[in-house]
Image (tube, rainbow, N blue to C red):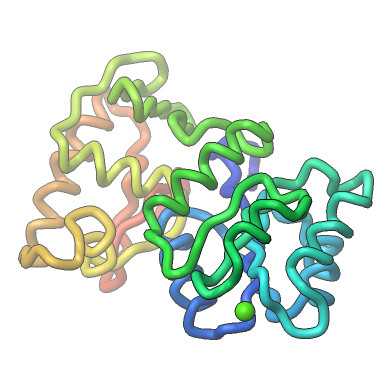
Length: 238
Ligand code: CA
């Protein structure tokens, strides 16, 4: 991370999928969850991307042009540098499930299309935790702020900070994307959800509350207001 202000690195997922619609859907959902996403649309490209970008986990379609998912997986396992790379095989219902299961593909897990995205995300988290490729998602840190998602604790410079539920979610979202400027509409989508109708002005109210809780005793204001653009978690002055 830039200038050593540790926010946990966001895991890189390589989506290997020849159906563009599925790849797009996966990218959308994974990015929403804070993952970085790389894509490959055939087996050969997958191996190149793995070499170049060193993803933390691979979602590997079983039926691919040029080289099957199984062959890609075999090659991943063969190389010492990628032997432990977590791989989730994605299969279609029409493919022979017993064959998928029975073949020694070397995949860590597999999931059947059409799949439930939450189920996929849960399997990914489990594999990422097991592989220790990334730290547990439960801890976030930025500047002098620490956030423990499982115990709902926030501290600033060691001091306990009390936040309402909305301010907590706002801070969590900011901590996942430090320094990035988000418009009110983007914050509404990310923190309140797409389906709920809330006035953009509501965001301002909660930002004010978040600021008030985070910045006491003349502490550095970490919530940056960017005129006509939105808000960011940042330590740089405007
Ligand atoms: Ca396919």
